[in-house]
Image 1 (cartoon, one colour):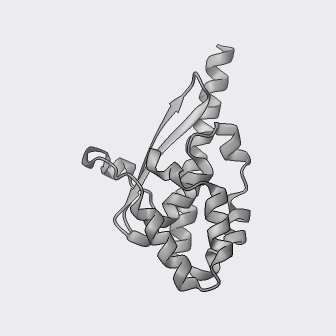
Image 2 (cartoon, one colour):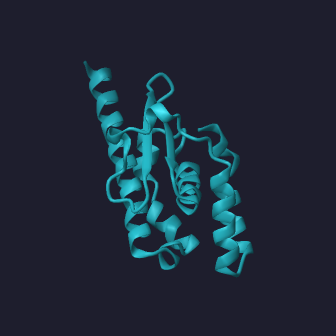
Amino acid sequence: MSAATAHSLDDIRSTFAFFDDWQDKYRFLIDIGRGLDELPTSDKREENLVRGCQSQVWLTSRFDARHDRVHLAIDSDAHIVRGLIAIVLAAYEGRSPREILDFDVQALFAELDLMNHLSPTRGNGLNAMVGRIRSIASDYAESAVQSSSG
C-alpha cells in the first residue's frame, strides 16, 4: 500500500503532461506499477477479484474508523494494469469515504487522456475497479453513519 503513495496525483499529472508520446506514457505507467507493493498471496483469493477486468485484479480494503480513512491494497498480474492501479491509488488511498465518493475520477482519466489510449476491455476493467472502490467507500460511509447514530 505505502509504495503507491510514492507517486502523488500531482506527480502523475505533471509527468503525463511532460510526455508527448504515448509510448513514453505507457513506459511511465509500467514503471510506477513496478513500484507498487505486491498483495500477499493469501489475499489473492476469488472473493477479492475485481469482476470485469481483462487481467486478474485483486482488491482489499480496510477502514480506519478512528481517522475516517479508507486503506486500499490492489494488485494485478499485468504490468500496465499495475500502472493504472498506481493512478487509482494516488487518487483514493488514505482518503475518507466521502472524499472518495466526491472525487471525479472520470475527469482525471479525461485529463490524462487514458480512455482514448486503452483498449475497451482495459477501460471497462479500470471502471470496474473504480466502481468497486466507490461501492466500498459507500459501505464504509454508511456503516460510519450507523455507528455514530447508534
